[in-house]
Length: 238
Image 1 (cartoon, helix red, strand yellow):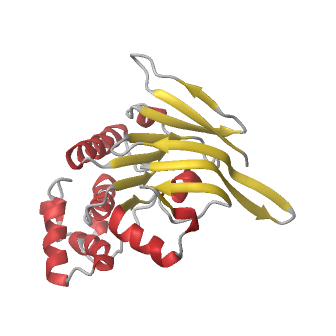
Image 2: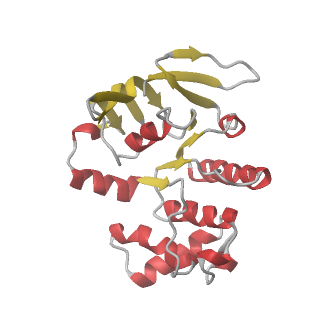
């Protein structure tokens, strides 16, 4: 599914050059559940953005399903994001005045789905995340966990092959965090998705069979045991 080879992301801050990621090599299998773990500013979100084709590497190659996304034009990438990738942002990014189902519908616009059909599909998609009865409600009337499930549903409505989530359990209580990760895992298994989650939370990271640990200027691989997932650490700076 993913093949990253010597991928680096370099930013210029005044006269300084700062690597968010440096020489990262990583493979992700089709249908895999992978977590990316690291503290704030470590580069885990940068890695997720590159994998979502919302950003480009400064150097190296990033292949998705055999296609080198780092060499493609924006029109091609936009089409890829619309058809193949679902993304859950750290913030809920819900519009305040549309109701729940109307917050899901925009995800289907790039696919050319008409208003009536997009509403039907959006309502249908709310059932697996337990929000069918909340479809007429506005975001302000929903709990934090419910808002997060709307954001997940919006990403899933277009039936992507890959779901990428940036801190999907942030600012949620322990019980709700567990529910959200359980939901994502169940959706992945049911739909045979590739699921990649960036997180600062070790408890969340441990839920995946494999975790990428992003640490400054360090590249190590720790094989899994019968009780622990396999862990890969990738080299970063900055």
